[in-house]
Length: 252
Image 1 (tube, rainbow, N blue to C red):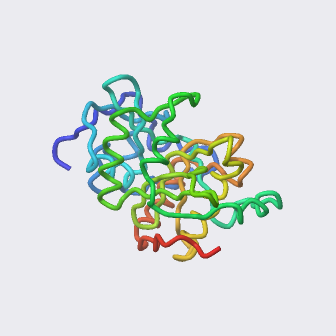
Image 2 (cartoon, helix red, strand yellow; image 1 turned 45 degrees about the vertical axis):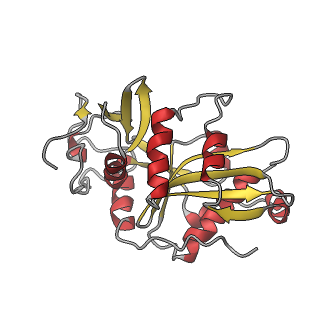
Image 3 (cartoon, one colour; image 1 turned 120 degrees about the vertical axis):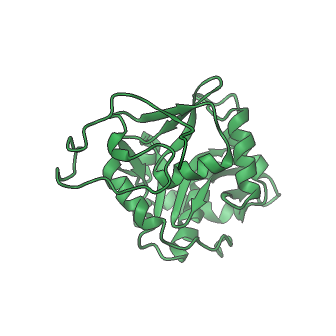
């Protein structure tokens, strides 16, 4: 790009510093048209930049660069690329016997109630909430552009029990958030995640990247692993070359 819209933070790691679990000779892949500059110049921290600018075009450029937005503070967007990135290899999803029993209880739909999923994920009663008005505005626009998708689990009587949403660019699906209703939605978010993995796998699992940002004990129990930033960027470069999946809900 020409003029950068994000202010890079000082304290970048040296290009030859390396990351845990990688070979010292392994270099960061080049990222074309990144508003954040070369990954080799990013600082050795999860937060790589901040900006007041925040719009759909910048968000898509960020995902293609291995970066995602999350508010740093009021009026200032943080742009993050964790040193240890959490991903879910599609073949590693752990489907327990109890989860398999829950699958028939729900009907899976795709993009039928994005607003409901966004509201569930952004419920202000949830701890560590980060989905603010700016996030809602931009991701609604991305949904209208066909870049954001929601996978939903519905009860037999037509209630949204849980679901997830994220950004799709080529072979990358960047999961943003998931939720379930405790009163009617036991394991509903896990069933939605299983459906998402089936959708992505149906398009060919080789090279596809399911990004979940940061590791949590809950995600680890589902089969999520961590990879160093440099490895994530290598996987991302490969994933971006793939075609997007067919967003038809899987057949029960």
